[in-house]
Length: 293
Length: 160
Ligand code: HEM
Image (spheres, rainbow over the protein chains, first blue to last red):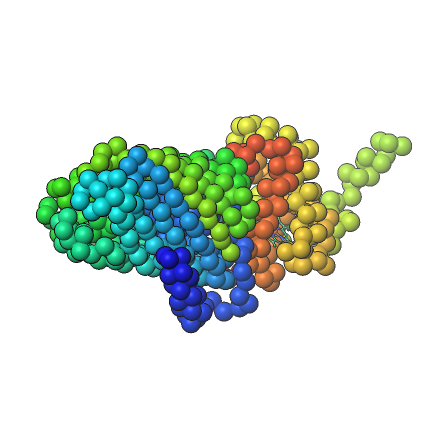
């Protein structure tokens, strides 16, 4: 069901990318990025490190072309299951448009909360990112790629998120990211600052009884490149905590990513998402398969 | 006889770096190490990782061979002399790695102007270099250390 929906969205994004005119003239050219430098798909659709966006542009194209990437992510936590499907278009290594559909399955907790067993929170996220300056790999060693982005999020479980105390069922995050691969150390570092009102990325709505305005959150990824195809790393993401009935924790993960080929990247992560919707200790395995062109 | 030949060799002025015997001549220029456009590594860590000058020569030679034969970027090298870049690329790598060479080639703008190199070509060359270094069994961390000194040259190689 959400897959057919995602396909329609894919068409719309492709159309948007075709209508926009290229930033630099010359023969358009597909592909050509170095392995792993398109990042992986985040659970919110933007290219990055899995939990947090990076200042890299989705897809395999360079500044001379347009590329796409798409991923499916599943996470099995102690009490919940999470799944996201995403699609992103990256144009001229400059602009990224993305879409993600998230589904959060409450399993037995749903019954306990009076929502019914296996109640699912669904959310759509539309993203846009613009790389302003710099490059994550090339150029001066200390000049990172710098990008700004926005994610418009719309919960499809509006009545329920209001019932648990959220002020809105939709909202927009804005963020700025700086990303650099320090080749001399084989270490990639990303830092992202995000303004957000979202509870649990928006799955539990926006704002709450403990405030409704924007909060500033910090996110970071560090990855160690062990070969052309393989890297391991860690991420941390601070979160707002706006719903007194559903305490929210910062997120962290440890990940390993393998470029199986130019067009296929697999990620496995061990994530600690803390307390989610009354249930503490939500840890578990996250898997992602991503295709890119 | 041998002594005479040596004396003769010493008396004949050395060929200028832009017109070496056996190589296609290029427009005259002033040879200097700064044309290599990178700070050399100090200490012998890098030289050992690359198995000394012999290893660096294998990597440079292998890279040039792969580049000329490559389906993606071979077209750009076609018609250019192969002997000269094999020598000068070796010198540049050897100089940067700190294995005791001087660089006698041109700077990166002069070497690449009008070639129409695109970002995807640059990435392709990096991949070929990674293969050449992998075949030489250069540890990955040392491979990236060489790339770290080449990455800032991108703006002088890739067309705007
Ligand atoms: C940072 C990356 C690069 C470095 C360090 C580099 C280095 C060099 C050096 C040292 C030379 C010889 C200069 C001389 O003999 O005076 C050279 C020549 C050349 N390079 Fe590169 N190069 C790079 C990237 C590229 C790329 C990406 C391409 C194309 C895909 C390319 C194509 C050529 C060609 C065709 C020549 C021969 C030019 C001629 O015969 O006049 N180079 N390069």
